[in-house]
Structure formats: C-alpha cells, structure tokens
Length: 454
Image (tube, rainbow, N blue to C red):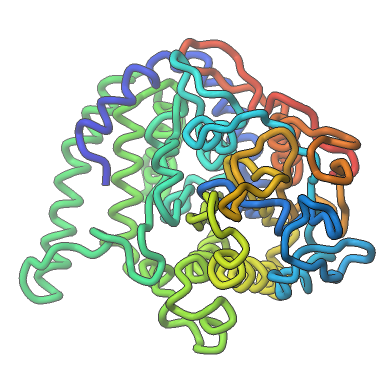
C-alpha cells in the first residue's frame, strides 16, 4: 500500500492532467474491451550494470576485440550468438536482435533512466517508466493484481513519473518469497482476522467514497441505481469518470481497492507469487531456486497469465571492468540463459507468446576493446538489445556493426525507435499522446517502429 507522503507527492502532477486527462482516459475506455480480451503484456529483462553485447549477441570471432567466447548456431537460420547461451539459442526462431542501437550514454544512472523511459533525464519532466505507460494503456480496471510489477528495484527507481501513483510499480524484492505485507496482520484466529479486515475495508470505503463523490458531484452516471448490480456498475463508472477528471483521491482509493482485493477479497491471488510451489521440473528448468533471476522469469510468466500488463525482472552484476570472461562463463551467462530461454519456451508452449512482448536490455553495452584488466568498459556508441513476442517478428537481425565492433555499419536505431517498436508489437499506436506534468501533449514514443521487425 502507498503511504501518505507517497500519495501527496503525486497530487500536484495529477491535478495538472485534469481536463486533458478526460479525453485520454475516454480513448482508453473505448479500447478497453479489445485490450482486455487480448490481454497484452510486456516483460522487461533488465540487465543492470551494462551487459557485454560483444560477448552475448554480436561476437567478432578472429578479431582483437572478439574475446574468448565462440559463436553457436541458433534455431533461426543464419543467426549466431554466444556459446554461453545454449538454451536461449534454441528459442531464437521467436527472438530478434537489434545490433545497431545508438544511445551515446555512458552513465549508469542516466542510461538506466533513458532505457526505461525512452527519454533523456529531464529536471522538469519526470518521464514514466515504460511499464507505467503499458499499465495506463493496457490494464483492465477489473485487474486485482498491480498492473506493473518490478522484480528487483529498478522499476521502483524510475517510477510512474507524471502518470501518477495509480501506475506506480509494485516491487517484489525476492522472487523466491512472497512480497512483504501481502498477508493481513494477525488479529486473532483466521476467522477473527478475516472479519476484522473486512470491517476495516468497509470503514475505509465509508470514509473515502463520500469524500470522493463530494469533490466531483457533477460526475454521476445516468444509470438507475435500483438493483444492487446496477448500483455497483454505476458506482464503478462514477469512479472511472472521477479518475479521468484528475481526482488524485479517487486514484488513491483505487490503489487501496487493489490492495484489499489482493489481501482480503481474493486471497487465492496471493498464490501467484509462490513460485516455490511450481513443479520441481519447472523450477529446475529455470535454474533452480538459487537462480533468483530464473525465479523472477518464472514469476513473470505466472503474472502475465493473470493479466499483469508489465513485469520487469532484474539481473544485476554486468559492470564487468575486470575478468569479464570467467565472470560471464560461470555467473551471469548461465543465470541469464536458464531464465530467458525457459521463459520464452514456456510462453510459446502456453499460447502466451502472441500477446506478450519481451525486451532484453541494459543501460548500455561494453567496449569492443578489452582493457588491461581483462574487462570491458562502458559503451553506448553501438550495441545490442533483443526483442520478441507479440507483433514482433522472430528470427531477424536488424542492423550491424563494423568488423571490429567499433561503429554502426548498417541501419542505426535510436532509443525512440526501439520504444515505438515495442509499443507497436503490443498493438499500441506509438503516436498516442499523453499529457505531461506541464500539460503538454507528448507521444508515448519519440521515434518510428523498425519496419523489419513489425
């Protein structure tokens, strides 16, 4: 749940969206039946520290910049990747590589903001994380789970920006354990606890609902309130109209409703976080309980099955200025391979692939030149990301780098183009406009979709 300070920090920004937000939310409601039916989701595999594309996706065998790893063939004809990713290689008919991304940003902090929002950091405008944008555009109002869930801390660091607290990420620090505060406090035996929590829920609505209705008395539906079912429909529509009008208090109440749904109304929802109860064969395929990234990928699969719009899974430890080859061979290489390869495999097998977009990325790549400590340094001039799922074609390599990997050789891609491609793969128009905290119209992606991929 959100505390008071967190809530108040969003009030001013949300108020600026009041009038423009009405048409924006009206458009979303018009799309809602189709989006809900399709249940579109985005999974971000976030590689904190700056992963070495030179040792994963864009190897240069025989060159001084090439490093120690060999290439292996993949399930996609003509595409080769690193030998340390054999499970992922088996799924490459579903995945594609962009080998010519140009960001020119070598700072961890600025690169993290850039790659999570699609915009350079700005002291005036707090841009939302891509997961928050997806939550605002794709999530069903009936979804009891949070629409944007971060497995690790990166999503929380970026936050919902000017979209407000309704689209803030819910953080799971350890995917091997249920999130903190997801169970009600002990208030006696199970029956007593349940009764007291429901009394608290009723008390909350008794206080919040009249306050929210009184702040926007002119926003009431014309539906008859004779039966309980019609009354519930009318109340839900009234709440949606107040949110569209910029009511921060109504957004606050909506968040608490999700929390009550998760903790009190439907306790079975909590089981989605219990990855340890999956079959042992599935857990082992993801790398076992000791592979926290693998368990995060397993949790991501379970969450998108439940309709969550975006899940971001963190794997840190990629800032390899020293001893990069042994570190990748024995550490992050196997962790990534088990988690990513099995995730793609399961999404395909469970018929979720056509409605789920995946993007693998970090804040930048690493230098083609190997330094004196046997590592690689920060590099944003040309590097790789991996995408797939939804409307994105698999088995494609877009762009290329020079023989030594120092420059883009063909088809450079900007960050805005990457984001436009992801949105289009999700069935969203990248030109969709939202209003920032200054009330200005802003397209959700500052670029054009990559035609070879969508």
